[in-house]
Image 1 (cartoon, rainbow, N blue to C red):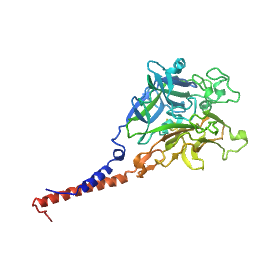
Image 2 (image 1 turned 135 degrees about the vertical axis):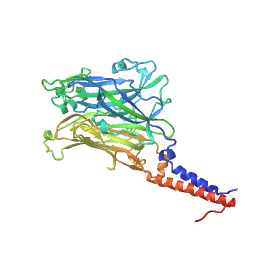
Image 3 (image 1 turned 90 degrees about the horizontal axis):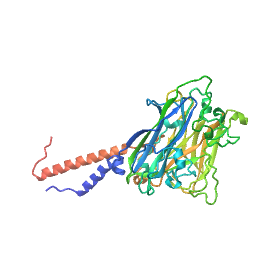
Image 4 (image 1 turned 45 degrees about the vertical axis):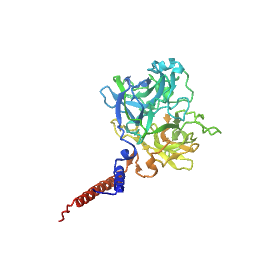
Amino acid sequence: MASYNPGWLVLVGILVTLSLPYSHAFWGNENKIHTAVFLSPKFVLGPGSVENKFYFNVDFPKGHIALKSFDAEVIDEAGNPVPLHETYLHHWVVVRYYVRKGVEISKLDDLKKVNRSDYISGGNSGICQNGILSQFFGLGSETRKTSTHIPDPYGIEVGNPAEVPSGFEEQWMLNVHAIDTRGAEDKLGCTECRCDLYNVTVDEYGRPLRPYYKGGLLCCYDRTQCKVKHGFEAVRRTLYLRYTVKWIDMDRFVLPVKIYIFDITDSWKRTPSSTEINAEHKCKIEYDIESCDATGLGNDGCIDTKRISLDMPFGGYLIYGVAHQHSGGTGSALYREDGQLMCSSLPTYGKGEEPGNEAGYIVGMTTCYPKPGTVEISEGETLILEFNYSRIRHHTGVMGLFYILVADDLPKPMHTLRTVVQTQDGIMVVTVLWAAVALIGVVAVIALAVHYQFKREGEDGYEAIGM
């Protein structure tokens, strides 16, 4: 009988395990990524017209899942991407809510008629109040070249039966705000919703605008009309928001992340109870930028910088971050109180005519994916949010939003194995180490097999053949 040291088998088992791909060895069985492409309800735009509708119960993946990304763009009836200089995508957002079974909501008017007890908001984790900025995903003109990918093993958990109120079901709302700027007298003015170009003096509810309100969301609501050049004509066309969702099935290997959105217009002030999650955060969403000429400054260094301090009502590990800015934006960053940079996000401006590269428009925002475990936020910690805009010209209705994903936990191997490195828009798993370990494992198995074979042949009376 052949005999061998069982310790060899233990060693081989360890080496073979280590030689498995990262997702198998440290994240359980590989979880297949599912992809689905959906279309919003159609909307029709003519030169200067505006679409800003809220679509309820839109198509969305079902089940207990973890969202991995959500990408969107405006297309025409033939499925062709529409450039920003024809239809400007001011923003799109997708929001979760719960509705009592049997109650149907398809548009905003339906929601207004629904009994309040039949509808429950299912928004993100904060920090703005009153349902403001409660989206799970949302971008604007930058949507085509901004990564929304959530790295493994993280995901946004949705569809958890334990979290759906009894008698309710989870549904999703999609808001699309698009402006047709074909033939516009002032394309940038239309995209910045200047009230004089829309000839608007009241908001969508008929309330008079404040005298000093020059432009923003209150002037470019659904069915308003921006001024076009005299005599310009073009066909009205049918458009859609095409959105692509990627997800995996939720299991014990997926680490959930929470969504937080900071707003540079947040008027929060520190009080004894200001670190509570329900502390008053009044987010105004938009603001104006005065030009340097108006303030008597030259164009050199003509930058508007806004900074606010926010005490964190939560703690965890920063997994992802991205800012949202309008034309004129020059970048944003999140700092610790001592000035240490945590995450920055910079705009990419287009240089051509084709979709995704439209000159003069922000066509992408860089994202940050910190090395797991390196950027931890402590509950009660003070962070500094900064947004920068060019002041070479006047801007109305600009935004300064910072979207982050935070995890309560880290993958256990990350505490001991330094196998992940940071890139600008993603995280690349270092494969060299695993390839080396795999090779060692294979060599060890072969060596053990040869050793065992020679030993058995020797015990059975055979002589090894030598050269």
